Length: 141
Image (tube, rainbow, N blue to C red; front, top):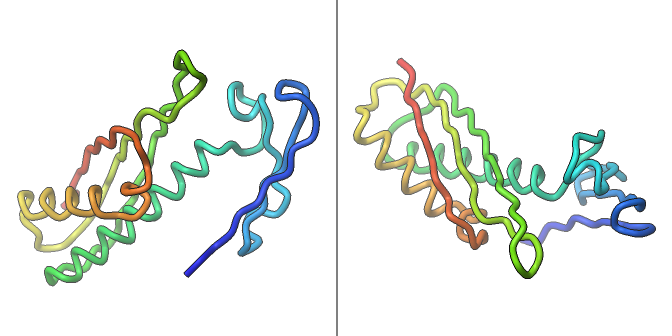
């Protein structure tokens, strides 16, 4: 399977602007720029898209692993906080923190944590990122 995303950029890094489009059309010429990446301007940015991708990937992987163990989640809500830091040679994504809130009937806390950690390590986006990935996972009753 191969999926595509594309971007177009016009102008200098600070005054210019761009658009991001996904193959599915969910994003169709969505604006991004310096102000959406480093300030609070309207539009998207690569880091929040990576965060959304990581949260979605983790949640699906977690659900799959739970199912393999005989559990069916009622809800898995994941937020991925992506850290972009200035370094000597430019910027780098240095860390991602996953915050997971899940309701899974009849699961023990230790089994929940074990499966969550397997999903964190094994989801394809986690494997892609060269960053520290931490997680806090909460099981609601």
